[in-house]
Length: 92
Image 1: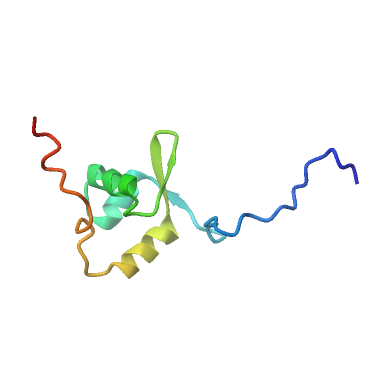
Image 2 (image 1 turned 90 degrees about the horizontal axis):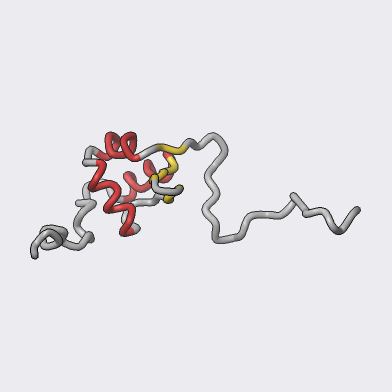
């Protein structure tokens, strides 16, 4: 085998979250509708790391199965409970 060619048989890193086969990615509007919140709130929670998502360029993307698992784990809880208060951000 030619050692100058890259190997395509590398396994992903152990700590990388690889989605299951058949999982699909959702955009902000789709996830906001599933969670029943505004797109702005969804982006805010994702930026804090409260919601599982990744930023692709300027857009947030979410794996459908991760959102459904997140909902199951946080059933009956206030998703904004751990978020900092944004009401003072607009104060001068």
